[in-house]
Length: 249
Ligand SMILES: C[S@@+](CC[C@H](N)C(=O)[O-])C[C@H]1O[C@@H](n2cnc3c(N)ncnc32)[C@H](O)[C@@H]1O
Image (cartoon, rainbow, N blue to C red; front, side, top):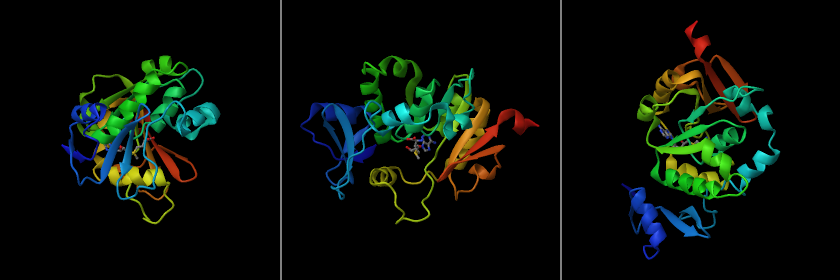
């Protein structure tokens, strides 16, 4: 049971919180609101920060879909997207679904796994609105779905044939005063660092038929101390790619 503050007079919020087993706590750090058909998360001691919402229709990710570089993007190269090859993906650390959405908008079917109930609630709300959208709804319903649970167990239980497992666990921040985007500050303080992430590599390798891709900050060590087969570097991050056939030889 996760403590949360919300307006108990508002039936939609009561329903959402019940569905995700979020319990009302008058002193909770975080608040969920439902306004303009959108669920948002707020940090109560930082009222000036914008709430977090998952918006695939009009938000920054929608802009990236239209103008963001298509299959030339590093993430697309990392999962092995190329002409005639559109892998199926399990995103084992879905978060706000941004990376999953980029991959889905490029044609991949993406099963997202998210363990934090508040994050899963925001994600489900974003999916609900996207599924109803006239422009992207059809392919969103076909390509993106959410599974609530921990990938530490779920990856070995999912009855799926999948080409790629994608992982982007929250890494402890090197410098707390670093210019983390305001919205991300709220998200980071909700989720914290995923200190058990090393345990994800083995089940991910067992599930993926082609490769496992791990997104890391440039200063992070290799996941589970295992050297990747290939590294694709971006400005602040890198994608460590573990290619199945390369790992066997
Ligand atoms: C850095 S965020 C991922 C951001 C995501 N790639 C995006 O584009 O929005 C990491 C997320 O993974 C989730 N997570 C970490 N370990 C997990 C696990 N074992 N199973 C499921 N979710 C996990 C965390 O709750 C958090 O929401």
